[in-house]
Length: 225
Figure (tube, rainbow, N blue to C red):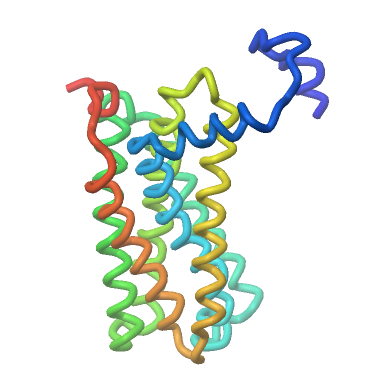
């Protein structure tokens, strides 16, 4: 709060004296919602993130109750997965300009979908035991480090004149999808790891489908060759 107040003055000139009216705000959201590329990027990122929220909702039961992980070690495993997300976010920053943010997001989405399928197969068959769940979960969450920053940056890039609306709608869509995914994990609870892993796999598979059907690459997205 102090940094914003003293060190980050508003850079947008704004419209002095212009009242905030509901009509223009809704029209701004409407223009974004009919923008195929914006919605494709927002939904792709939101569905991928929803898999993480399914993991957040279901992992305490799967780890502690089903696999007898001591409660004091749950935070360590959770932090390890978060560390993978953070690490790939930093790697993304180094490679996005070289390879193109959209290409990185596309590759990561395919790897994430594969991790979701392996996770579901391991939970269904019991193959690999707890490690068969833990490793693909780590890969799925880590891939978000490539998907989330690039989806947000590409969605926002053409909308500088309505950046506030674009950011607000992006967050609303993504967290609404994430809330639905985490709620489904609870509603489908059956005493096994299948509800969590099935929702994660579904999210991982749906994101690339949305990408391919809604998003067309741009020269900026492809990046330097």
